[in-house]
Image: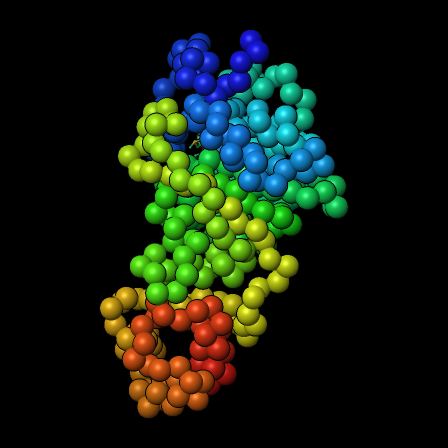
Length: 290
Ligand code: SAM
């Protein structure tokens, strides 16, 4: 069979052959549109020198294109029922390795070290299961893996949050967590019709390019991220009020006001108006109070 997997006919053929039933709980929405796949590949920055890591190959629609365009692909798939299917659909490609593991439990750093030589650029490319998009991306980012970029199809609304700027309703603690590690951009919106079965939500392709180092200097990352979360705890409240609730007396109102004044940040602003540099200044100032 010389047709690509990502067509409605071929996908149905494969599903019927294996009597495969979708598990909604695993976010199984398979791509059946080769144009969308072409767009993902075009934006993913891969070429025959590059390695690719995929999360959730499904029946192999994207994996197949990665096998064609990259040097080597390692794909993590949680659903054991898909192992014989993938062996069949990707049997002709000798540069694909499937790992039957939950990506949230997997030692990805170890997998990269074992499969890709040190100097080879590695890109994450995936049509992610929507129910765990954020945990997957935050895991991959916080682990600071040696990957060059991540190009992922995710729920449109989540993509917008990750790529947002200040004073936008999508801007929040997730935005800053993602942009601390990467430069984020939505490259394309994708309609529901390109999936089988169709999900309830629209999707976007999000491209994250890892930074060499964070754009701001932070004394303590854990403290920084905690303070950002606190600043957005109640979006309609002022920064000062959110901080007051967060410190809950451990730092009193007067000290909060003085600290804000010392760094030139108006406490009556809302968290959503602060950019990442201001959050770094804010976190460092409070951290240094001890
Ligand atoms: N890549 C395929 C495509 O584009 O047609 C399938 C994408 S589908 C949206 C998500 C895939 O992720 C499914 O195959 C699902 O079984 C798999 N998956 C779900 N949770 C997972 C997890 N925790 N670890 C690894 N794979 C997972």
